[in-house]
Image 1: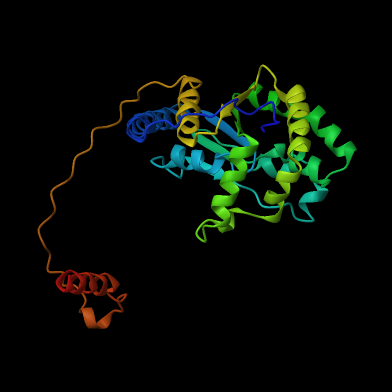
Image 2 (image 1 turned 60 degrees about the vertical axis):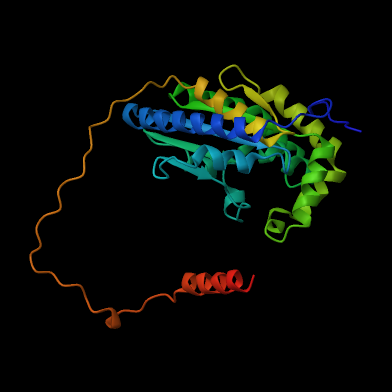
Length: 284
């Protein structure tokens, strides 16, 4: 039984793969157009990804950045704070990752750790938590007043779907690294996280930087909906770039390539694979 009020009621029908892939590619093409506008106009964009564990934040970020220039669009996924970090003003270590002109920063988790995992797991004091709820809206208003576009997305997933995804990761050696004891602890603390999230929204869902909830029981729908909203929230236009063409290769000036035996090459693993497949085909 789903107990979280943020979760989608009922079973969500999965978006058909063909429709999803076609629309995703169209939206990713628009993201490239948007990024070029950001670069030319010197715009600064911050996108915050928050939500439940296994809600699909990472996979959404992957689709957003798939075709974008990593020099312009950066992902900030900060590790646990060091002892030195803990002595700083809480927002200090996030500030250095804010975008300069012509840049986009995607925060894979953000300063909202204090309102979520730190609050629930007791990694901060009640006083630190209350100070965060007071300072965070001020901090974000300062960013917006300085011209930074701030978009915040909360990925909402039901308790049953989260548990299903945890089980999938637990049985997949390629994805077990995505699970931590703290992730599994979130199952037992589901309602604690719900209360923390509700309190966070009360204080930080401000007009200058509102929360946008992404229903994420179907990852395909979540990605499409989130990217479409992102694009609709940025006043970008088509930017005409300088026309490019391949130059003619100049005539040789007598250069001779270094003899192969004088260099070290990686073994031709592909050739061994190809040979093995040929033998298997012949045997069948």
